[in-house]
Length: 113
Length: 117
Image 1 (tube, rainbow over the protein chains, first blue to last red):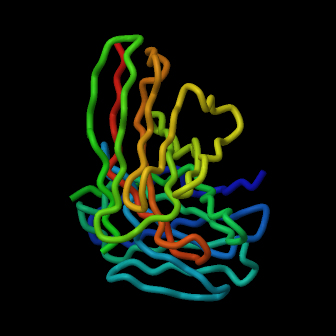
Image 2: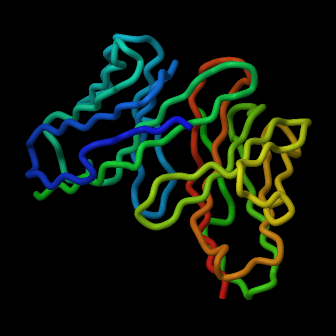
């Protein structure tokens, strides 16, 4: 089955630093999604990417859909303490009734004030 | 928009009890809902997909008689863990998406922490 390799597994940074994380896949996805999960809560959608090469921003967050459709990255600029959490990439393919998500294993982000 | 509400957020019960978890889309109609299970420090594992008006599709290795799913309406899906045992203790999360045939992303509920004693 499809697998996503998400890296890094964890990051420890100082407040104000920029962060970058990425996902690669062994196969193509039509849609890439980035979610953030806080402890004890469900994932919250940060950015959705629908087109190869697409670069999308949401405040301090920027994500890109790789042109090969097999990868995506997420950048966070000028990190703040509330950025702490687990970030998941997810790939989705459409077709018929199959809209399942394939998740990466997550990147645990710790921001030191 | 796209708010998904999950209830209860936390439940503790004795072994052998059946537990029902509700997932509601508050401001949109969800033709498709998904149920996930998440163990500590791990990613989300899809258990089943349900489409309103049809039977749920379970992932390989998930017991359909153990985890009963009912997509009762366009805004409500329920997961019932029947005769729960300690190994069923986990964080259960639902998600919903707007339409059946588009690339709309999944929106997640806040999860239910299930602890079986």
